[in-house]
Length: 346
Ligand code: 13P
Ligand code: SF4
Image (cartoon, rainbow, N blue to C red):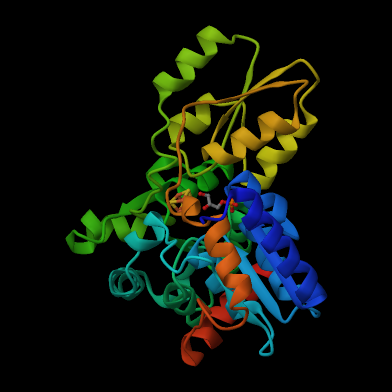
């Protein structure tokens, strides 16, 4: 007979008890409620990477999130720790857009024109380890949506230009917040010669934005915002910085998933908060705050985050340290570690 959800939950709880402090289950805010409820810690991608980097006790880290997050945890974890992900196919569309070959070619083209002494690579956490390693080799850092502004400041203190991979929108929203004029930002389309720019454009620009994006967050439009403003004139709208510039500008607040969690928690009782991010986080926040009206700007689901379920989490615990172990080649690990460490010490 098939296990019911309750059977699976009971077995996972028993596995957690059996493994005790040897086990740490990390869950990203976009995970289903039942997964978040079973985790030891939940957080945004920065919080979880910090947890993985600082933990001294756990032997087994089970990462309920997408592959780039588990891979970053594996780079930061101690050699005696193993990192597992319940489904190896839980990838990320945005990360897939930044193919390592295309990123390296883009970096080489721009660095050759402006001189490597004048540009720092910054890479969003949402990328494969090889891209983080490229950043580590060239004096750059990783950043997440919760510290992108600080990462830009850090990079500008060293050199005058930044190449930001792979989220065009987070890069532009961060540069806008720092007051960088639009004419000093250039999108770099890896499909086009020189990214679709002239040599003069490249020499003049201050920030290069690799043309990558998140399909979950670019679904939100100005029309969605207008429709919600008409229906709920007193509501506040908060969105994730992977949304387009126009959506961010038309919203009341913007920030990482942890920022959104805090924003909803701090909103006055009786108020309405409309959120532009992945639907599972919004649904959980609505349950956690019955005294407020928490609504989705529009339903948008990340199918990769959704791949993690009770069945594959249980399978991970039953095969602890053995199946779906996330491994990173030593040479890549060494350079990617530098870029991640640069982020953690920002
Ligand atoms: P956070 O860093 O805000 O958790 O976001 C990760 C992500 O993948 C958003 O799409
Ligand atoms: Fe990647 Fe977008 Fe899913 Fe985040 S929400 S994991 S950026 S596809």
